[in-house]
Length: 125
Image 1 (cartoon, rainbow, N blue to C red):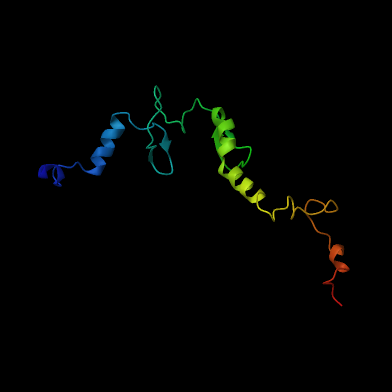
Image 2: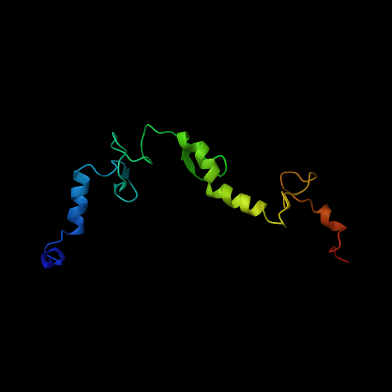
């Protein structure tokens, strides 16, 4: 039992990583920034994981286009999208008013005209 816990009996981390790469248990996608392959397991029958499968089509999330989703999982994702969940929590608050800071219909492209403030309560006396 002591032999299993000794330093000599354990394989170095680098050696274990190399063996994992050689045995095909890692995704074959090359991460250029990290200069290594993806560490996820490939999907059955493929060399790539679910995130890097070239056959799978990724589309922008309709709730928050800052991230993408697999096209086949889009319907499920919209229900659990973190951006949507956050939006629903905000809308549930008693003080929430939709488009409160959205501007008025008189404004062009979000620009406020200087004349709007000329006669206001804070105008220079």
